[in-house]
Length: 145
Image 1 (cartoon, helix red, strand yellow):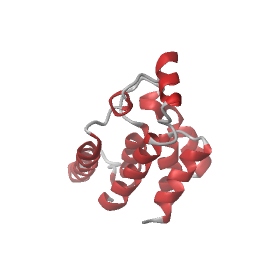
Image 2 (cartoon, helix red, strand yellow):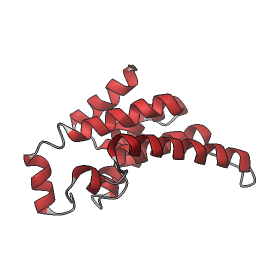
Image 3 (tube, one colour):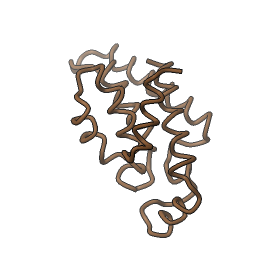
Image 4 (tube, helix red, strand yellow):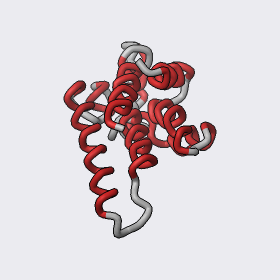
């Protein structure tokens, strides 16, 4: 498997969020400095600031797809469709693996609450589940980009 996949998982294990782990590793190839990628992706961890919405690993990967395929001219419908197609493909593949794109559904708890955070820590979600999501997001990203 790609060194980038391992680097993304390693970044998460260092203590960065899932979104930061993906964007900081993959964004560099598109001119996004690591420090700026870490800052830009910071609010997206834990399903967008612990809201439990879209998993940060997914969000980070979608930003990478935008860096590669995103359109810069409003009338460039072809590029827009290519980007959306890649995003849908990514999302469908991640959902096929885990049944959801939503952090709260993937973890089965709400990280926005003290109880949910305690559950995630007690059950080892940050050391067992979340690294799997980061790995899967990176592996799918490697394939769809």
